[in-house]
Image (cartoon, rainbow, N blue to C red):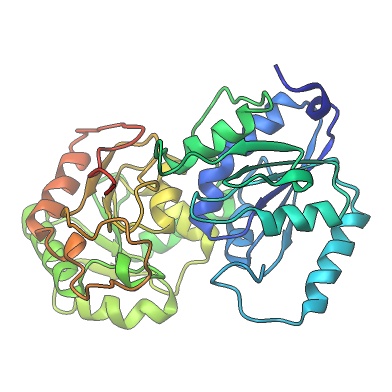
Length: 369
């Protein structure tokens, strides 16, 4: 049962200031708010990366882009921009705010933003006593007492005020125009979507989460030799040279790098029988659209495995696991580089054959205490 104060909240601000994948992993909790408070309007305060995917999430009515100065991805900007954001939020007269963070993030800057904007209900996990900054405080217990999947963490947060969802899968709606455009591209590349083919995504924003290019090439070579089916590589325009190096000389391989916008990338992943990817945004798109995924999972964070989708999560256990670093501090990336290409190819073949493994949280090595 929804808390009485929250039941009256018709304009809700959800705050998720980091990346596309983080926004996607917050969608079950956002759906819980939508379902538990009939008629509410939900606005997402997010980064430019988060905004790009929020446009494809049906539970979100509006987005506001904000480069919060307490996020590492944000470039410096004049403090006047932060004052303007407070005024903007104040003028929009939100009834409630929900602050979604990973356990290593401090929610209090966002809480202060909402407090100064006069938003009367403010909910977040917090390690220390927030006093008046939060009206609804959920004590932070991670990682000392438990470690939850990022999706479960946010579901538990909104459940503390009584919001629950009937469907806890990730949410993303692929536009029909994007699907039609991608089908045209696949036909132009002589790819029959009624026959086996595999999508591969070798990029990632953080170098610590990138499987080595020469091993990607060997994965592609083994899949080509085993299946003889088309392989479609995706990535940004900046990643096109990387993909060209991986693909050079291999048969029936296609690079769509820099050729797809986000709706089209989502459409391609939805059409793909299997996706192989580093642990980055496309893994969570695959989970949202139900595409089986081989996740090359750098052990930088234990919370972001594929959610409620057939998956193989591949890594090599290391003593330096869960470093939360964008660049490998040991300079060896053994958590990824020691995963054999044959293991990656075999995992993709298993999923292609329909050997699904739908797990809420694939097993990962324990945290170091």
